[in-house]
Length: 152
Ligand SMILES: [Zn+2]
Ligand SMILES: [Zn+2]
Image (cartoon, rainbow, N blue to C red; front, side):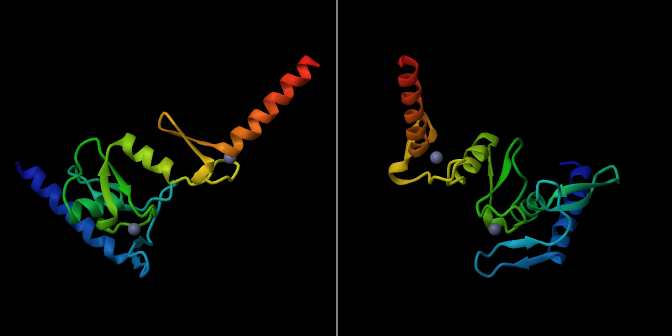
């Protein structure tokens, strides 16, 4: 481990400590909610000094994870188990692969685009995809009606 890494680590630690200056704790969920700057996607941003002395922005949940738990393995994303993008409680954060993260984001969607629930009898599982039975029935009825009309 070289000198550069050591300096970098100290700077990251400083950013980690500054997180607590802009935080409210949700008593019910135990989410640590960031009250500082955010980006367009609704994630918290915090200024971090880079090795070259310039300041850059980093995602608060990533800074928090590295400060509290350790380096995030290369190529992994940090998933919010609580689904609250502003939360930086390390207990609510888990490093996952981008494909696992996308899968989880999808399964967080509980209703089809028409508002029918993806649950119980209405849920059809096919090749890892979730389909809405109600929507399929609507589609099938329309299809049958069209075919009948074509036949005259
Ligand atoms: Zn949380
Ligand atoms: Zn539907």
